[in-house]
Image (cartoon, rainbow over all chains, first blue to last red; front, side):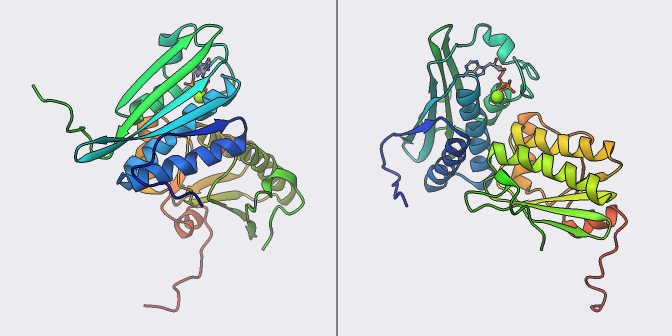
Length: 148
Length: 137
Ligand SMILES: Nc1ncnc2c1ncn2[C@@H]1O[C@H](COP(=O)(O)OP(=O)(O)O)[C@@H](O)[C@H]1O
Ligand SMILES: [Mg+2]
């Protein structure tokens, strides 16, 4: 069994099959638990990861996820980069609309994942690929952020 | 106990979905990691089983499931829709609180899917009286 410590560096996991999606869910859950995420926070992040990893597989034709533990003073976070070299997303606003799917799904993966994490970013180029980056923190507001 | 032994992807990776027939009701117990392909196979198997056994109810126990994403949510909704066409009612039992909170935020509220806090209450909802607890005060 992998012994990731809370000071572990980034880890890359392949996304190429159903079994890989299951493995990504397990590894994200384990990393979040080790960083002190509560049960609801873990469940939200793992669910978001499951949606985004499936998009990487189904819409992006496969790729990988990079799992990066973050340290912001007294709190810990987890950043996940879902990377593929698939067709890209032509209309991002449309893709982020609840219920929009280009086929087969419920169209809640991208928009739902956005609601389940604290930070969400999409970098997509038609014909080149898509990277979706999400970050969640063990506490709701990372203390590194200055309050005006 | 009746399972799906020999029915392909519903069994595999050390994972079995137990399906019990209790009188007029099928009790399906989901646990742990359910791969996408296995969930789809399960949908086919349950639907065939309803048709063969002519049960009038299906209880899906998800108390052992740690996350429900839009894929599994859709499969559950489709199992219920298929069951309804075959004149059976479906009750989803035992959803974990963290899963419920997450589903609401995801935007997946599964309308049309009856739920119960646990299997016993789900059975009651379907008109099956479990005799458990009869001897205790
Ligand atoms: N990695 C990706 N590469 C290409 N297109 C994507 C990717 N992720 C999402 N999309 C597009 O955005 C749409 C909405 O995604 P999502 O909300 O997850 O819904 P669903 O996966 O159910 O279709 C998809 O149908 C697809 O067209
Ligand atoms: Mg999706």
